[in-house]
Length: 138
Image (cartoon, helix red, strand yellow):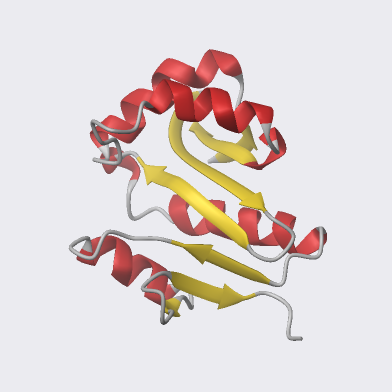
């Protein structure tokens, strides 16, 4: 998998990926989410391409206190190959490079598969019922 920045031409493929992975909700317009992300720290919107086609994606950002990850998705046909792990490692690397000390993310409580994935990467429940991992010891 080749990790690269999102390009506007990836929009339909990314929205289809998010839908295939069950990440969209009626109250969140994925097209609007993409437009908003492209206005703020667009360099943290990554896709993973396999044979030139979008197979994975992740949105990340840094608010000066913590980093956040949203929309981590790997196409069902490409799961188990380490693509999600690779995307998270790249996000962590990029956030740490700009001084981000901690990365947070949220997982729906009933998504056991995602919870296990993040636990295997070193994430643990925070008191706020989100997951966090310290990137730089303070």
